[in-house]
Amino acid sequence: MALMSRRTFLASTALVGVSCLAGVVRQRSAFAQGTAPALVTSDSARPTIPYGVASGEVTSHTAMVWSRTNRPGRLLVEYATTEAFKQARLVQGPVALAVSDFTARVELTDLPAGQEIFYRVTFQDLADPKMLSAPVLGHLRTAPTQRRDVTFAWSGDTAGQGWGINPEWGGMRIYEQIRRLQPDFFIHNGDYIYADGPIQAEVKLDDGTLWKNITLPEKAKVAETLEEFRGNYVYNLLDEHMRRFNAEVPQIVQWDDHETTNNWFPGGMLDERNPRFKHYTVKSHDLLAAYARRAFCEHTPMRFDPHDPERIYRMFHYGPSLDIFMLDERSLSSASGAPLSPRSRGPTAPLASISSRLIRAGLQRGHSPGEGCAPSPAGGPAGPWGGRGVAARGPADAAGLWAGGRSGATPVQAGLQKYAWHSSPPLPPARPAPLRAVQLARGTASSSRS
Image 1: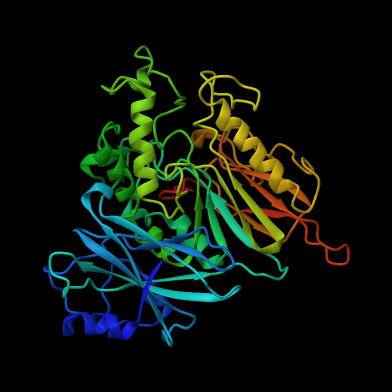
Image 2: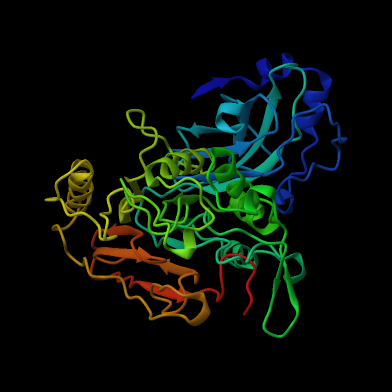
């Protein structure tokens, strides 16, 4: 992480840049994304941050900060432990170029544990370093180093089955409901986008009325090119609730199938006899998955593995009470859709073995392997929403809330084949903290129709 002093940075920029940083509205309500602070005059010559900011993979002392701009620019992140940004530090991040769809991320390090962190993001124009974007604010809370209750929410399946952002119904309201709970973090359990689910401008409902979606050209058809996959992520960020949520709640993300196409598997081909795939011209699962993986990694606040930047399965510790294992059972699935076992043979067998060892090693951190590893409590088919839910015993798109600790490992699931295992070392008997999961909302993670 490249650090530079605030004085050095300000001295290298023009007055417009200084006023851009100094004129920030420092209230939590300013986290509405893509909105310039009151004292910053709109200027089309500046870089912009139209899709807000996000943080992710927060530990006791580190956090990832992500954003996207509209032109070649360098990511700059200023952060502090107060909303007034006293004694703030400034991090000079990487450049955002077209090759990454103008996205960039930087890791904040040496953060204080269990602390509120306030940050603001700007982009410096590479063509004219004196030009800065208007800043956008964000907030996160680092993991503790002492035992305490941990609260997180999880959900999945955003903007699926043709139900997109409908302003008349309030947009993606579920994100606002979760944001208000202020969990320590949020796990997106997969189907972050529906690359195989076009969003039409209007959908006729059973009562004859119209459901009216905001849409984009990239969402008007199934995704088959890198630009179309990228457009699916941009589409979700058109929703103000999601942008506000991203700015205030750190995320941990994994993928399932719809980031690529329905029930894809390595080496597979789309079945032309299936009407579901009649609109595809690209038939190779591997080609679609390559585009999908690139777009997923670009547009989510993941921490890249330096040896394998596109690796999705990973593990990290959230303080002393919680270990989190993010698996990738799509890349490891067979033609039948069943996950491969560690004894599987073929090109994905080594990865299956790695995932198994990852979980086993983590479970040995405080208790014996396999303790508490039971199938997630999923509900049955959920009517028109389809799929299965976890703990909420409702639709796949329901959100769950977890608080406290529990000895053993529990798979958290928002749909089939997308597990995030959570291992929490045993707590002392005098301080029980049972697992609690509640349904937060019904309907999809897009505009709720219930």
